[in-house]
Image (cartoon, rainbow, N blue to C red):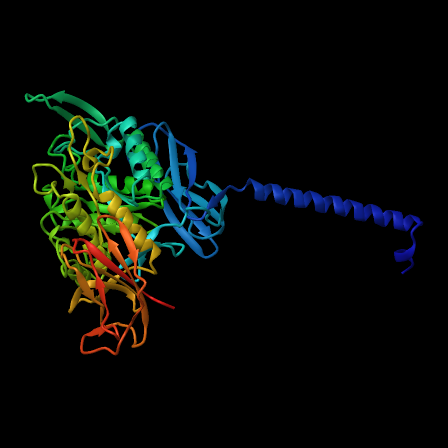
Amino acid sequence: MKLSINTTGKKTSYMQKCIGIAAHFLVGLLCLMNCCVAAIPKIERWGRYEITLKGLATGNPYTDVVLKATFSNGTDRIAVNGFYDGDGVYKIRFMPAKTGVWNYVTISNSTLLKGKRGSFQCVPATGSNHGMVKVWNTYNFKYDDGKVFYPFGTTAYAWTHQGKDLEQLTLKSLKNAPFNKVRMCVFPKYYNYVTNEPEFYPYQKISSSKNNDGRVKFIWDFKKFDPAFFRHLEKRIDDLNVLGIQADVIIFHPYDKGHWGFDSMGKANDFFYIKYLIARLASFRNVWWSMANEFDYIRSKPRDAWDAYSAAVVTNDPYRHLCSIHNGSVYYDNWKSYFTHVSIQNGSPVEDFGRAVLLRDVYFKPVIYDEVCYEGNLPLRWGNLIGQQMTEAVWQGIIAGTYVTHGETIKTKGDTIFWAKGGVFKGESPARIAFLRNIMEQGPGPLKLADPWKDNQTAQTDSTYYLIYFGKQEQKEWRFSLPKKNGPPAGTKFKVDIIDTWNMTITSLSDVFETAAPNEYRIYDIHDKKVSLSGNAYMALRITQIK
């Protein structure tokens, strides 16, 4: 006790020295800890963490070297494939979906690459980073953070193969357009209106020569990729992400016709390509997988091969991105577990009421009519919709609880077709699609038909919110009427907005509508009120409960 109160003796001086030493030690330890924490890289949730390693460049690193890493955060353990990026550089990419410290260790058959360890800290997402888009509530989509995603897509199959100037113009056009998903091919396309040679090729070239018809004949080493091609593709996918656009990446397509041979590489090379592609792209949060465009037109791949290809995609993707397969004339087995949603080529379901919903009820998955013909002026039946037809197709899909992808094939002298190469939008439908997207995003949630057996024009989120679409019908008057099924109780009050889907106007009525008791199938206004309409086609009504 004396020791504790003596402030002048030697014992106190000794104690103070001990306390001082301990304090210095503690400060040093804290500084060391802070330095260690500061040294750990910080990556946003759903961002991309990349490991770069130096290894052998001799032989064929694409086939000779196996590289993986296991990432762990508490009880979460995720295995990720690495890839060779040329010039003796190997990479592993990881997208964390959980905050906190992640540790990793590499696994390889190369002594230069195995056993590498490290850590990074995953911090909360910021800004426009909402994570990956996932299926939600059976028929719709949400981001990882819960934000609803309505796919209003467009088509630009070969836009990443057109050179810097045109690609930048395409990105500028997309920035000012309503589209939040782009269907795009990995391989270049040799087809109507797009027969140019790309700047980059996916494989290293062995030789090339001209045929008698003047066309170039290529011979590729299908066991050696060209990393420059994939780096360029990745740059463009990141460019789309900055714009808030999902990249619906088409893995295979039939538009080669023997020009390059990428559609007929053989099954073993196809699997080799799938594994490499997914190792490079799976960490991009805005990627969707489309197994093929018009799978049934790729004659070198029999129908039963697509199960194996789809399984390879799912197996190699640790994050389970959205995945579909697109048809030509014949639908694939979209109910299979590889496919998160349904991608359909068929314009007839969205030409009139009551058709689009049928596939929704067959597959019990989100349905996107990704190809319904295009707004354009081509002398081909799939490329000559007028703007009203393209716009109505999108509305018909939305009303049915499905979604429709836009495409444009307007050809002007000396210019490109957006559907093929990108460039500039010239059509009338993009502005109208932007108008519809705004209506959807202002609403309380995705739509479904209120009574698909009796009423294929009335969609609802629930009994408080309805959209009624009249399509090509021209009428001067509408009697207030809602389906009894899933309808509101008597005495519910509503306001009505008249929407001109073509002229892009919304007129709010001052009248209040009140529901009467339902009859057998319908619910009317208690005073049998009616709404006066313009008699124009392409009108709609928004009916919202008054709280």
